[in-house]
Length: 222
Image 1 (tube, rainbow, N blue to C red):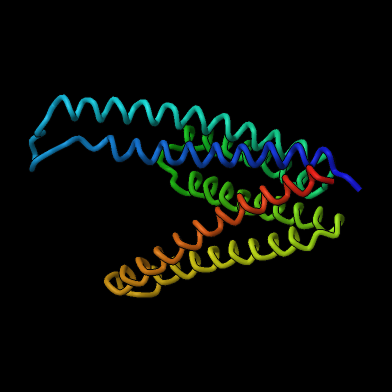
Image 2 (image 1 turned 180 degrees about the vertical axis):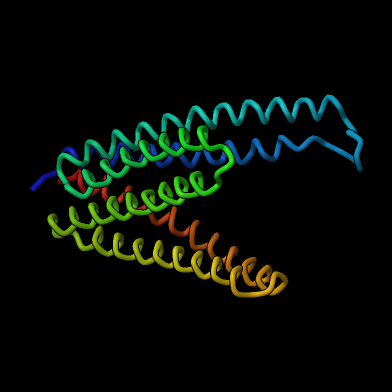
């Protein structure tokens, strides 16, 4: 049993994720360079500060372009894989719905600029869809692993889903802490949880790339 479309799609998706990582790094560096060299309230070196701001503009422009290319490649990869596995088809439908939701949110925010509720609902909806899309992609890879009797893919997919659920639960706890505890106590607890969430998020992203790479190699050899 072979899945040529899934093989090509996951390969494209993997490249798209790598480009997204490069984009994030580029934009992150632009934030660092956007801070001019200062001493108190006075700029120490005008030329150096100007050079930093120019570099920041270049980095954010490059990062933005790469982000667009990465997003297109991710969409193409999911669309290709959808020809062999239904879970990817579901992910594609959710992404299209997310795009429509974002457009509707932008239109409503323009019509009702003072309503934070409308923009908030759109943002929350988009975030939920993003999580569901990730679940479907991972589940789809796990299903392909089951069809190929590949326990490695199945185990990696299951472990990654566990990591993602852990991150979601930790973020939920952090939000509850903010609501229930006093500001001083909540700040300390949320800071600690924030560090833990960051570590788990990095592990999650590395595990996700590893799963895509394993799936790409496995499907390419079938």
